[in-house]
Length: 360
Image 1 (cartoon, rainbow, N blue to C red):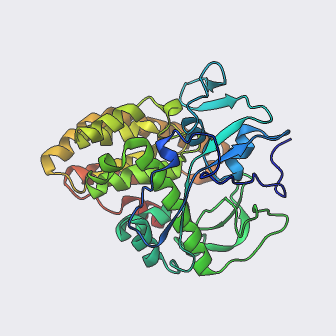
Image 2: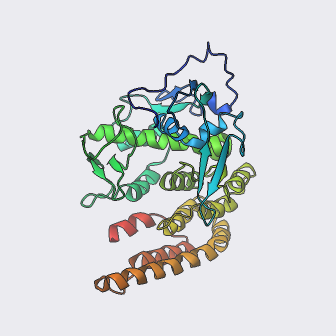
Image 3: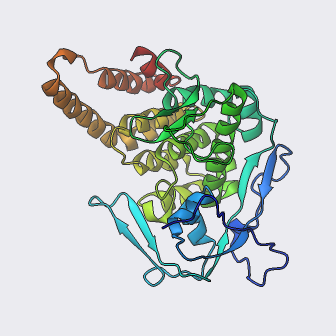
C-alpha cells in the first residue's frame, strides 16, 4: 500500500527540524534571478506505515534518484539495491524504508501562476529557444489533425497512460489524471503544464551535469541534451548514475568543453526501442552551433551508431510488412533519416524531425 492521495506527506519546516539538510539539491536555487520561477525548498519527511519509496517520489513528482542523492545516509547495497535490464541499459532502484525514518525531499521548481499563457511565454520563462520548442513539440505531441497542438481533454497515450495538453502525464490541479474521469483544460493551462515539465527537466539536467557546465555549452548542445532527457525521461533513466554508461563522460565532456564528445556520448545515452532514429536527429540538431570541421568529427564518431540504427529500421520495417503487406516497400523512417544524415554532411542541419513528422 503506497502513499494515499488524501494523506499527503506533510512538509516539515526546515528552520525547526533537527534533521540536517546535507544535499546541495536541497538548497540550491538553480533558477536564481528568474522572477517567474518559484523555488520550493526541500523538506524533511517522516516515513509512515504503508509508504513505499516509489510512491513518495511520485507524490512529490520527483525521480527516485534525486531523493536518493538528497539522502547520503542511504548506502547502496545496504539500504537500496539497483537491478538492471538484461542489456544493462535500464535500472530499477529498490529502496527499503521503515516507518519513522527521516527522508530529505529535494526542492521543486514551478512557474509563477499566470506567467505562462502562450508558447512564447514558455520559452521566456524556461530559457529554451523558440526553434527548439517548435521542433520539440513535433516529437512529444503529434495531434492527428493539428501537429504541435495540445489536447485539452484527458486521453490515453496508447500505452495506458492518462495524458493531457502537450504530453503531460503528471498531476493537474493537484489531482492525478484518469481516463475514467477525463477533465478539460484551457490552452493557457496546457502551456503552463508544459513550462513546468520543461523547467523540472532542465533543473535535473543542470543538477546532474552541473549548472555552469550546461549553461556554458553552445545553445544547440544544450537543446540536444534537454531534448533527449525529456523524450527519454529522467525517471531512473537518462542522466542518472544508474543509467550511466555515458552520463559521467558527458559531464566530464562539458566540464572540459569537449562538446564534440558530449554530443557523441549523448546520442548513445538512450537505448529505448523506437527512439534510436530520434537520437540521430538530436545529434544533427546539436551540431548547429559548431564549425564545419567539428561537425565532421561528430558525424565520424556517431556514424557506427547511425549505421546500426539504419539496420534496425530495415529490420523493423520488414517485420511490419510481414504482418501487414499493404504497407509496401517504402520505409519512410529510413528514407528521411538517411536524407537528414546526408544533408548534414553538406551543413544543412535544421528541422529534420519536423519534416519527418509532417511527411508521416
